[in-house]
Length: 385
Image (cartoon, rainbow, N blue to C red; front, side, top):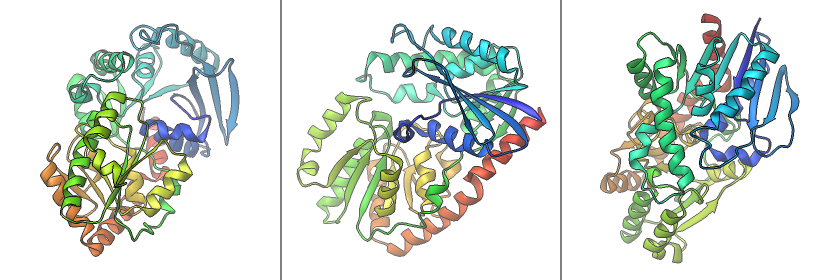
């Protein structure tokens, strides 16, 4: 039986699941692997908000939470991963895993490629695809993270020997930088709770947007489309779910530019929600719209599809791998407000089309993204090394 050490983020409280798709994917995968008798799993979880190391059991797995203190916030993504590297090195010596699996965070992947043991990296997205779509109004810390991510990718991509890619885009990037890398295409694992929704109960025309509110997620284009639909007399409203502190200047500009929509309550900013609250949003929405300018494999699209909601999303990054045009969703050209408006108008006017696309999406996602399927593929990849 192989001993696997996984270096990843893992939530201490439910609300942390709102921090992003990678956290959700790791959470779902760890919980499924923890139930397996085919491996011994130890999960290394760096935390800045704990005072000392703690260990808890989850099924057959052990979760090791350890303090990862950052000395100066503007250096954390340039130099301080070396602090993390030293801590992880000690944990590896202590637990002696056969494989170190690093997930998502580029700091974690850098630790893995420099440890000298068998290493698997899950690459979720590519910073060099995202940086050009950021507007530069966010904090210095976030800018440094993005720039550091690009530099880190230039370092670790040529060094990866074993990798899990969640999209064909990331698979191509790994292969371009290292032709000899062993790569498995494995999707993100999705929580069973979304499959259990069994379709929307909504009879209203509520459009749902779920993401951190930042320029590359394209909320400005969705609001422009909503304004056009409202001017045509289409009865619809928008719920915006997600953190608004990533780029507060951008958020303020949106609220000023679209003050008319806010005044008539056509747009509601719901903020960060718990898992249960988010499930309720999916339950009562008509459709999900994510008009991103750059993205990888957004977890929110999978959640909507599992809940049998039709999705309108941009044809960029890994999204075309997830959605079959007019079968499990509608893909539109990024940054094209006219096509976005047309797609929304089409779905809002056709209840049968929404039902058909939503049903097909739910069936497709269950076959491909359930935690059981993803855990099986992951274990098979471990065993192939």
